[in-house]
Amino acid sequence: MDEKIKAKIMDDKKMKRTLQRLAIEILERNREADKLALIGIQTRGVHIARRIQVLIKELEGIDIPLGILDITMFRDDLHKHEQQPAVKKTRIDFPIEDRDIVLIDDVVFTGRTIRAAMDSIFELGRPATLQLAAFIDRGHRELPICPDFKGKYLPTSRRERVKVILQEIDGKDEVLIMEPKGF
Amino acid sequence: MKERTFRQDHLLGIEHLSVDDIETILETAEAFIEVSSREVKKVPALKGKTVVNLFFENSTRTRSSFEIAAKRLSADLINFNSSVSSLKKGETLKDTVLTLEAMNPHIIVIRHSASGSPHYLTTFARSSIVNAGDGFHEHPTQALLDALTIQQRLRTLRGLKIAIVGDILHSRVALSNILLHQKLGNEIALIGPPSLVPAEFAKLGATVYYDIRRGVRNADVVMMLRVQAERGARNYFPSIREYRNLFAIDRKIFSLASRRAILMHPGPINRDVEIETSMADSDESVILQQVTNGIAVRMAVLYLLKGEIHETLN
Image (cartoon, rainbow over all chains, first blue to last red):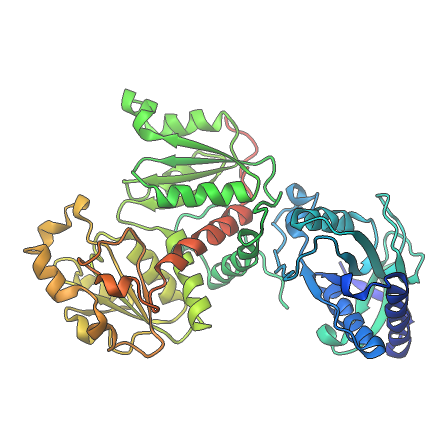
C-alpha cells in the first residue's frame, strides 16, 4: 500500500527525552534493580529496550539484563497468512523465574503482539511480575492489555500507521503518522 | 533487513529451490534452534495442523527427526508404517495417499524407494509434500541441514570447496548436496571408485577424482557417504578391505584438507569402513551437530510450507 506522511510527531530530541523518562519510571517502579530484566520484542522493540538499558546504566551505573523475543511462533493469525511470516531469533540468556520483567515494544496497537509475547514468556518460566513499556500507544486495543509505561499516547484512526523510525535501522530518529495515499 | 517470502507449495528437492529459498529455510532454521534449547521445547506455531510421516523404506533417524520437529511446533503427527499397512495387501500408492488425504492432513512427509514418487504425489494430492528421500534421487532436508552445519562451523556458505567421498551413484544425499552447492557457486569434488562415481557427474559442474588424496586437498568440507551394502554397493568394488584402503578417511588424509576443514557424514556411520573411528570422534567431526540441526531444518520446512494447496479434492 502506498503511504504518505500525515504528521511528524517526534524528532530525535523529543525521542531522547521520552526514553529518559521511561528509564526513570521503570527504575522508580522497580526498586530491586537486581531482580529487573528487560525483554525487547523483535525488531524495533529490541532497539528501544537496548537504549533504555544504556540509559539505566548511565543513571544508576547498573547493568540490567536484556533479552530478545520473537513472537511469530505464538501469533494468533498464523493460519490466515498467504505466506508464513519470517521467524526471527529469540535470545533470553538469563532465567526469568522470579524476576521483574519489563516487556518493551515500539508501538502497542491491538494488543495481540503483547498477548503472544506473554504466552511466549510463560513458556520460559514464571516471572515475579510482568510489566509493559510501549514507546507509542496508538489505541484501538482488541484485548484487555494496558501498558504500565507509555512514551506517548497517540490517538490515531485505524487506517493510519505509526512509524517509529530508529537510528539503528533507518539512520535517524523520528516518529511519523502515515496515511494511505488518496485520502 | 530484507523480508523474505517462501513461495514453494512442496519440498520435492533442492533442484526446485532458488538460492533465496535456501537462505530463507536456513534463516528460519536458525531461529528454531533456540526452541530446542528451552526447558519446554514446544511452540504453538503449527497447532491444529496434521503431519503424516509416510515412510515406505526403513528409517529411524529421519522419521524421528521429522516427528520431533512436528511435535516441537505443536502439530499432530501420524506415523504411517508401510510394513503393517494396506500396501502389503495390494493397495496402490495413489490409493494409500488418497485414503490418508480423506483424513485432511496438511503436510505429507514421504520416503519411497522409487525416484520421483514425491513429485507423483503432487499431481493429485492437496497436502504439501515433503521429500524425505526418494530412491537414488534427492534427500533435500539432509542437504539443508548439512548447509546449516557448514554455515555454523565455517561462518559462510560461499567460496568453499566441498569434497564428497563414496557411493555417489546411489546417494540421494550426494545429489542434493551437489545441487545445493552448485547453486551457491561452491567448488565440488566427487571422490570414489569409477564404478560408483561415473564421469557423467562432471556435467553437474563437479570435478571427479579417483584418488582421495587429490580430491580432499584444500577442501573446506569433507563429506563421507556410507557404503550402502543393502543397495548392493558391494557389487561395485572387489572388497570392503580394498574400499577401506583406498577411500576411508583417516587423520593422514584429512590433514590434506584445509586447516579449518570439517568432517561430515549423514549417518549411520560404518566405523572403520568409510571413516576411521578416531576421526568420527574427533573435534573436526560434526556428525552429531548434523543430527541436532536436522530438527531445526525440518521445523523450518514444516513451518514454511503452508499445507492445504488445493481447496477441494474431487
